[in-house]
Each structure stands twice: as structure tokens, then as C-alpha cells.
Length: 120
Image (cartoon, rainbow, N blue to C red):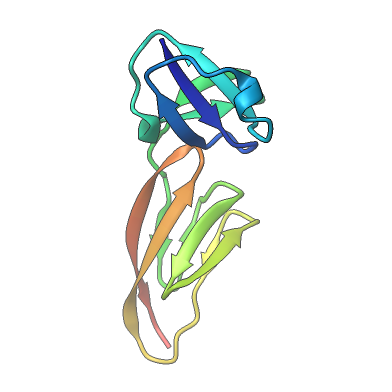
């Protein structure tokens, strides 16, 4: 039996190949016991559906100076600064035309790096 501990957003914080009771993690969003061996980096807990779910790929759309079609709550790391996407898109401003690497993370998606072509 395996134990998975999730935060209140559904991100897997810990996985153990033995049973740990929920009382051991009082601040956790969910403590789940599962028969299967799962990769904690591939799953998340969906509180709306009350179930364990596999992460999926981002379906972002990259255009000049912008990333569109991002899920609300996506964390975007740009040049060492992290912003939270709250409206589905991220606009970038630059002083020199360049390709900007952006690291995307979201509880229900695989972490991803994209290159955004930016014009000044």
C-alpha cells in the first residue's frame, strides 16, 4: 500500500510505500492510500471531482510577446521572477527584441519551458 500526501491545491507533496494516517499531516489537503505504485510527479488530486488524476500537457499558444490559453493559476517564471496567471494569458514586455524562456507550472499539468519571441 502507498500513501500520497497532497496540499490544498492538489499538488503531491510526499509519496511513501507504506501507510501513513492523515493525522500525521494535519495541514494536508488530502492523504490518500493507493494500491498502485504511481509516480508522484505524474499525478495530482482533483478536489472538485474527489479523485486522483494524471497530469496533462499544457496546451499553450505562443505568439509574439504573449502566451495564451493558460489555465488560471499557472505559475510563470520569467528571468527569475514568478508571476501567477489569473486571466489565461501572459504578456511580456522587453526593451530589446529577443526570445524569452518562460517556465510554466500548474498543479494539473506537466512543468514546461517555452520560448516566447518578443519584440521591443
